[in-house]
Length: 275
Ligand code: MF3
Ligand code: CO
Ligand code: CO
Image (tube, rainbow, N blue to C red; front, side, top):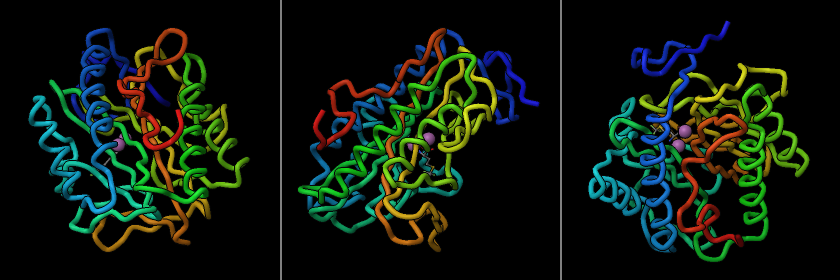
């Protein structure tokens, strides 16, 4: 049985209860999420052939410091970087390193800033130079999956409606949905209840209520959905080495839908792709 709790009353750990936040929390989340979105905007110009993912990571750290925010991934469960950089067949949790990006790569950059205790979690795909038409198509499909999932968010629906919308569209385009990772409640905690699955049926999962705050972050593959985690303990890759893409927004549920906290202020929600 799922239960709900006024976020102001709740202890700061994931108890499985779903927090319902008020106006002050929404304001805090708006600020944290807009800082994350501004950083992701800046990364569009930086993400070019020859740049290393460590250079991107350093930019994310310093941009956070300059604006009074700490990257949530830093020292999170043993992770030591300020961002995740997931290239080509890497599904998620790619660790920044000294290897330069190459023309034709597609890289997901995932940033979570903690500002005044609120977590703003978002990621986008960045084409590196000219990319293949098949890669561009996967990026378009994956972004559309995210927006269709968001369109399913309204009080009274179940979280399964988000998953159904994403799965139906992705599979209709002959792509597959990764099952091993999901969206999550977010707020004062980085990863909180509920899990937001990117597949399933509209009559599954807890009811969506006004005041809930969570991420939607579908990972969509050109090939099969199966993933494995490399020996570094983090990097998740497609088992068939097919191309994988992901976009992520943090949203807050309103009376009649949701507010997307992490929308790009610069119109760069799909960097490198037509608006
Ligand atoms: N930002 C990721 C998410 O969307 C989580 C990364 S956790 C890390 O939930 F430790 F891998 F960085
Ligand atoms: Co997330
Ligand atoms: Co994220």
